[in-house]
Image 1 (tube, rainbow, N blue to C red):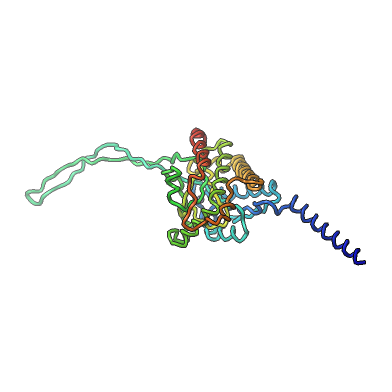
Image 2: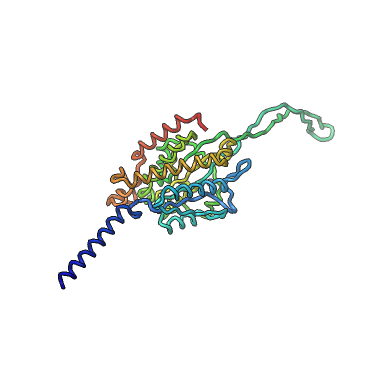
Length: 343
Ligand SMILES: [Zn+2]
């Protein structure tokens, strides 16, 4: 009798073990990328940048919903969470809160860039202006020439895609060799962002950089590579620590902010509003995200952030030096120079 009980217990134990093994082999729980957060920039009272006939908030929502659809159908083992699915306003604190409470493994923020019109001034002619000096007997009529100018503006020629990654260290900006930031954003989303210069904020930003910077750059490079493949002009992966991308380091996961093009460029506004353009863009984003997941789930993803996370050397005073990402930066630089003629 005792033997029977023992063998039954053993059988149960082995079958339980088998179920467990087969679950983890086929399982949905083994991937490092279980949940992806998609954030459509702006919305509601904050329309974001405006073009001739469309708004940034409207385009970002359309792209985000299409990206959700494609990821849900092609990454069935990954949970896709949207920060918004309708035309509503969230400030960036709320967006970060959603991403963190949903335990995201990736934060994808979708935006559309804008650049202010170029102002021009031209001398047309001189006009004669009459004036008087002195009083009484001494009063004299005099004239002088004054220039007449013509003022006009033309659309800003800035165009192309870029992907932003947060970098705590301001030195990174110099190292990345990008002097002129071409990002023009409405301030509504970031109005109540905490002071990024406070000691707490600086420590928090450095910690985020140590944990998630490399994988954010990795994903950013993959996204820009896919944009280049579909013939978009890629301005590359840009590292910044300004207020406009504060949300990225407020999430507890690798995070990128994609500027999908310039709404102020007639051709790009047309493209980003078209069904075919939107499909092409989300196809590219989805391919990059799937590539990223494959790399992260491969047995030995090189230079993973988890190695940084568990490293005892991680300290508050150390930031990830930009040299570590040289290969990606070179790749991005190559992209930028090779595609200057593209849209
Ligand atoms: Zn925006």
